[in-house]
Length: 471
Image (tube, rainbow, N blue to C red; front, side, top):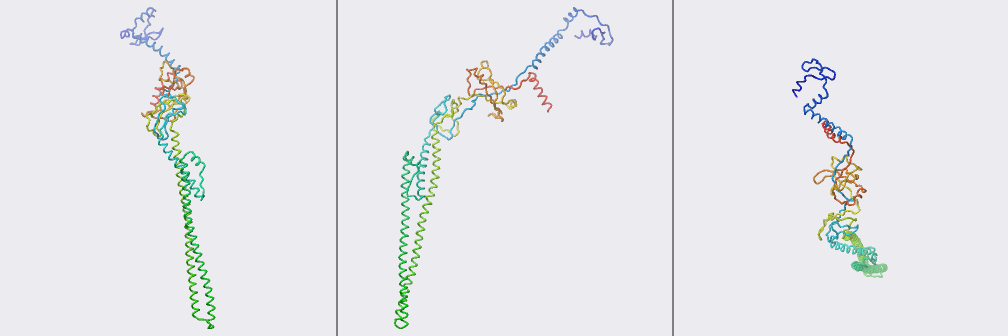
């Protein structure tokens, strides 16, 4: 190559022009034009490196032009890829207990198809039955006692029970026993009260009789005093005339004084007797008031206890009514967590899951936070069922129905947004052999706007440049 350059010191300026020497810069005459045969011979004798370079440049040009045309004219859909699974549209139902219980018998197995209201398991309700019997006895006993206390409070001499209590007594012998006990107690309490009242009334009557006797004695003494005073007045006139003895007058005056003293004694006794009557009447009133107060207190306590017993009875009856756990709706039993009879099941503890039979399946996927900006409700999706071979089954179209507003985290601390999509049922119907099931893994492609391949290739460069200028 160096030899070739040295042998050609001239530089070609163009057709019909003179040549200028490279060493002297002086013009020189143009050589005669070469013939076609000479040109071909020169090309054949040219070095192989230059020919390869020209061929490579030509091949590269022929390759770049179609690629650039394809990259600028072809449209490709952008897609966000997310992994997920199929879930029932209505979500699976977790069956649990409101209150702790003991498993008596499990009536279903994993995969059992059940109808709404069908028993799933039975609970041991021995303790609930005992609680219900105790609460029932306290309730009806309290109702019978309330009827008796209200009759006593109204000072009624007859005891009548409500129709509800009478109907219960006709069906339950223990309630009838409560009625008989309260009737006996009603009569006994009235008898005791009447006895106390009779004692006090007799005492008052006797005191009043004594008052009447003392009053009679006082009246007699007052009459004697008046008579004696008249005698003294007469004898005093005779004594002044000398016809009566002074001794007789003095004797009558002593008699008068004794009668006056008797009157004073009688008045004192009468006052004491009246005080005793007043005390006896107060004691009689106290007996009545004490009885009514005791009745009111007992009635209030009994009503409170009866209301509490009614609540306990309802709670126990509710447990008895739930001795069989029923299916909340039709579906398939899965994820059973209680098998052994006698096992204790806590309140709210999951027993089993029920996958609704009528619900359609939807896709629930996890979208990374970096892609969430490109996902919106209504976007088209293509869903691939990972459980089936790709060659046997295409992707199924659908659309996004829900995008979570807040991110969640997995147990490993990875953040994600929940996405739900609904599949096109008309396309699913074209593949009757495809059986969808809860938990089936899926791969979701959320389709975005169309972009050219050149845009994809230049996007990292633009992003890098944008970050560089920002820095």
